[in-house]
Image 1 (cartoon, rainbow, N blue to C red):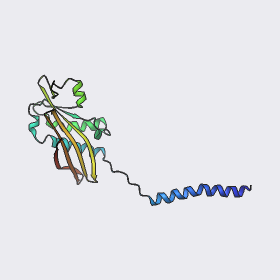
Image 2 (cartoon, one colour; image 1 turned 180 degrees about the vertical axis):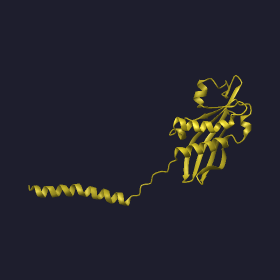
Image 3 (tube, rainbow, N blue to C red; image 1 turned 90 degrees about the vertical axis):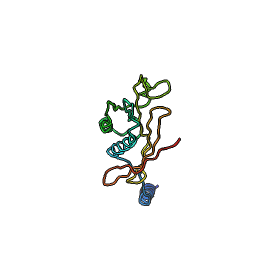
Image 4 (cartoon, rainbow, N blue to C red; image 1 turned 60 degrees about the vertical axis):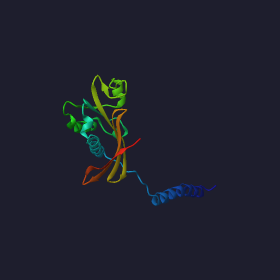
Length: 179
């Protein structure tokens, strides 16, 4: 067999798939899902956590606010970024209410629940706040699911819609979610 003919055949075999790939790439639009920056996650989180405590009566007789920073929305944040969220919440550190980072499992392991599953340890009562999801609706709109918990009879799931105007996230709507 002539090697010149063999080389030509090999070039065509290699060139054809490359040509197909180039055509495919030029005609296919790749859509990547938008994502939130860590700065956005911090800003959205503080807005949502503030909205959970809008009704200050939930803090009546509480000694601490536990914020769960181990949930999915916080996974990408560094320790110092999580600290920014906690520091923002220190404004509720009035009347000796401590702000801590803790999941319900951590609180349970520390014995902070009473026999009825309330956040009550020897009269030390608390409230647990968590953000379970953040979903981008549009480039400037986000939907967030969260929950505050004091006990089985004192819990509320909420859905918060936020909008970004002029670089700032603001609460657009708060909806109490029924079970």
